[in-house]
Image (cartoon, rainbow, N blue to C red; front, side):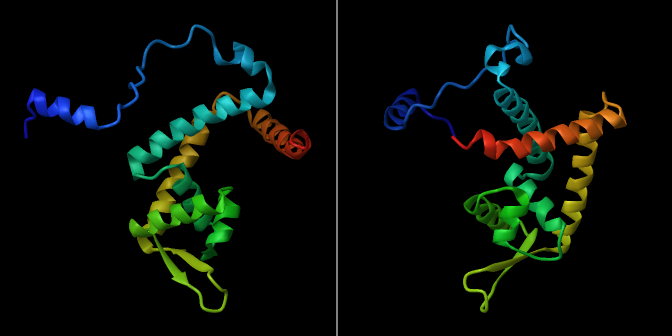
Length: 179
């Protein structure tokens, strides 16, 4: 279907203007670890986490048609035979609304079944379908391969140290956020 210039002008006049697309130009002039904002450890960790999340999101969207919230929900669901949506939220470190939305999307894709309970109020029991089990296995293997690439520059001892340090940073979060 072709659009005449007049029709295009009329459509653009009534439609809200789209923000300009971000160009994939040259890299920034300064390395992330040298940026002044990243002299704050929390900002630096968030920046690294954002870059990791963007790469993972691109990977899982490309290969599975699922975003990071759905990936986290699938990983949580694969750890148990069945879970309530609230438990999925807790295990996946998602808020309740994001977990519910992810479960609905997974259900629409045929990866999970959702059973409304009668005895537990509005609670819903979520289970992986056979296709969901296979998808979970594949996603878990992909996550393992991605993690191996991430830590390939480290020794086993350094990886254990990194995990230990990250757990200690996590333990400090409530203290940092106390004010």
